Length: 236
Length: 217
Length: 50
Image (tube, rainbow over all chains, first blue to last red; front, side, top):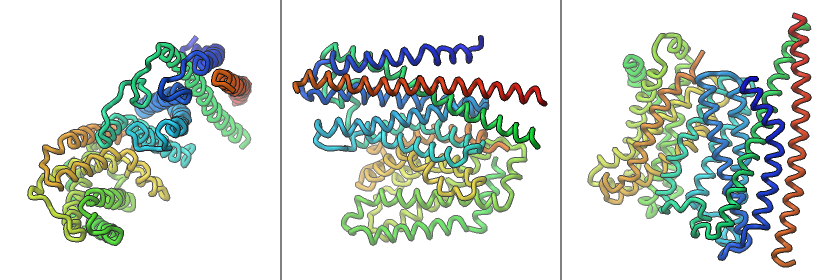
């Protein structure tokens, strides 16, 4: 069996159940297992969701860039479909980051928004890929637009480190410890670390599931259109 | 590659269309700013005004160079010739860079005049700082401007595409300019300049590699 | 409601929501597979015709 067929098999039969179970486990951990954080209280639990949305968004954009590079240099509509699906799923998670961030910030910082380096960077990233979506919507079957989109995705991802550095310099904040909730100390309780890891696994699986479903949608849409064209031709 | 560059430059020098339109546009935007700003705030706002004006005017100007070619049909001639596409990119980018550099000098002068911004004793530092920003801007703008060659009503797309990507350049160039205008030397703006230089290298190389993929036909 | 009770409630609520979403995705998966079969069927018929 080809790699493609094997992947499809796993994606259709294993992934849904693994993802469902993992997310249930994660929800259990987040609400029932993890302790309240000392200073922030129960609100801090958003963190497990918020951080993983961010990582999933990055994963999505990264996959999009890779697929775009493949599309540009090797061609083939599969790569383009994958890129599009990845951007769409990535944007979903990116939007969730921007929504859950303020929800978390309001009780903790007293304000809905700050020009915190990470938030700023997320907004810029969101904008770059929102433009990607706008661009792609302007030319569904246009190969040139598809190529431009691919370039945009690639260049966008290339830009990420630069954006990060320049925004951090601008805001004058030092990079905080990874996994530290907005720079307020690390994860003190080992239960929190466990929860984070379980949630991470759940979100990666969810990401893959959504990506696969979306990719199938795009693939089938193109396949149907091709069949339609052939039927039209056959009639003529 | 040199021939293309020569050709573009010669065209520019003879017609001076892009340059004059660019200068006038920048002047108008600057004037709008003067009405919007209290002159006392001008000094702090100057780098920001510089770059905002420059970005918008510059994007339009870069787009024009491609539009002219499209209208002439010479774009297709260029594609049919056996020149390496990457070389075309570098040529176009350099052409844009030179035009934009001239425009920026004019803009800086206008800035001094209209907003009463004092030029630092070492104007070279200011040019270096802004020049670095220019290179990155040219790279990105040239890369995406080719879009307007084919797509007609989509000329609004260029700012949409380029601006978010340009954020590091804007931040660093503005902050570095601010340092220089406040009297510091180029060394004081070191961190900003390093980021700018990195940006320039990455996106020039990326543009050179990617341009080929974009203008196939 | 005490905090532990609240947390249980949240867990239940989010789990319910998640199960609904997962169910929808599984349902979508089935629809996709059916569509895929139909498309392949049509394609082979078209191949045979020409």
